[in-house]
Image (cartoon, rainbow, N blue to C red; front, side):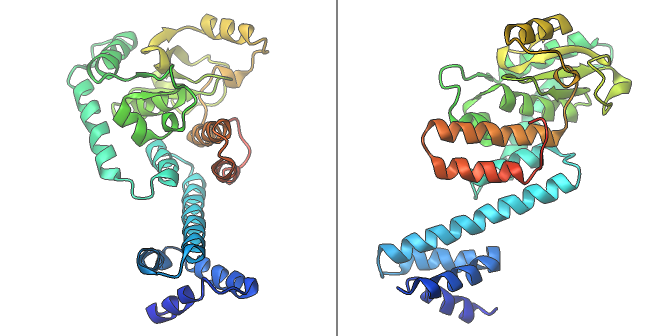
Length: 292
C-alpha cells in the first residue's frame, strides 16, 4: 500500500459510521509498523477533535501490542536462549522507544567492574562474594521493599535506572551479567519468591533434578545472601507447600519472562489498571503454559 493510500485510510478514521470505521481500523492495523509514522503525524496535526485522536491512540496501541506479542513468540520459538532479549521485549511494552544500546552499555559496565576482580583461582563462593560486592555495594542495587508491587520493579530499564527492583528483576539482571562472565547461574522459580542457583560446572543446562547439581542458591533480593537446600526447605515449609523438584532446580528463560509478565499483570491489577492488566495477560498466554 502506498503512502497516499495509507493517508486516505487515516482520513477516514473519524467517520461516524461504525461499520466504516471498523473496516478502516482493521486495514490500518494489518499494516503494522508501516502505518505508525503516518498515524503519529496525523495525531499531532489533525484538528478534527477528540474522536479522531482517541481512535488513533487505540489503533497505535493495538499495533504496538501486536508487535510486542509477535516478538515474544519469535523469541520463545527460538528457545528463549537470550534472557536479555526477552526482558527487553517486555520493557518495550511500556517503553516503545527504549534505548537498548544504553541498557546494554550499562550492563556491560557492571560486568566489566566485576570481571576485573575475578580470577580462575577463586572458589564458587568467593566469585559470588566478589560479584555481590560490586553489584550491591559499588553499584548500589537493592530490593525495593517499600514499593514492592510497583510496575517499575519489573521493567529492566527502570530497575537499572533506580537500582531497585523485585526478586525477579534483580535476579534477571544478576543472571544476565553472570552468564556473560561464564558463571553457571540460573533462575529458580520459587513460589512467592525467586532465587538463583549456582550450578556445578558440568551441569549447566541440565534437567529438573531436585537440586542435585546445585552448589548453593543466591537471593538477589537480599543483597546476594547465599542459601543452602535447607533454607529452601524451610521457606516452603513456612508456605505449607510440598517439595517439588522445580522449586530446587533451574527454570527456563521462557519461564522467567512468563513470570515477569505475570508480575506485571498483578501490579496493574493492584493499581486498578484493568486494560494494561489484560494486555499483560494476553502477552503471557502467548508464551504458553509453564511454571511462570
